[in-house]
Image 1 (cartoon, rainbow, N blue to C red):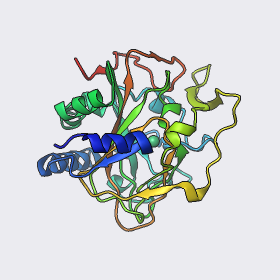
Image 2 (image 1 turned 90 degrees about the horizontal axis):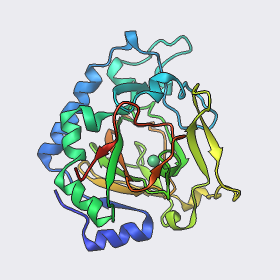
Image 3 (image 1 turned 180 degrees about the vertical axis):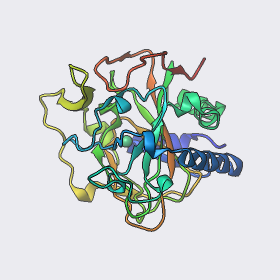
Length: 289
Ligand code: FE2
């Protein structure tokens, strides 16, 4: 593995994101791809609540149900919205129906745990200035051919809020990510200008999730033209600042876009109890343990 060089760190500081090409060795990449496929093959739709993942503000899909809210220490499956008809019937083969698997892969799956807690990641966390980094959620995201869902414009710290904000995303391309299959799109430098003005929280009665405003300032308005597409090769690592504005387009191509990602926060800062993801059964994983 290669690390976050001085030059790449400067780029990260300026843009709020940076790509490290060929971060994964060929073996690591192959192991992760194989493990992802194994998990896809293990999906059993017969005992699935047909929970669909959506970050849309409308609450479309049953994003708030318990299957989602209690997934931080489990390996659970969330479906592409277009993979299911109105009656909950799958319209594509099982392994092509899954939008993402989460959120406890870094704890429960040996392959993804090894990558998430590796010495290279520790080194990067150190370079980023973390004192007590905690790894708290992990996901495989598949963006299936033709039906791969979009992710609307957002900042990761809205979802994993600490005071002050500290979330950083580690995003590993398991396949080539292009403008055709829904690569990441960023507003470079927005982490310096766009404060976190809203948060994704659990409703007070615990029935689901919602967005709340946490600032009197209006949410930053971003023009389409400000987004830069970031194509990366399989094996790349993209490091994402929790305040940088980013999104990804739907995948209408014939090629999937498999990625693995996990998030880190500063353990020395207070983690908000309203956040959707809570350490219900055990504390978040200490990277420097
Ligand atoms: Fe994100």
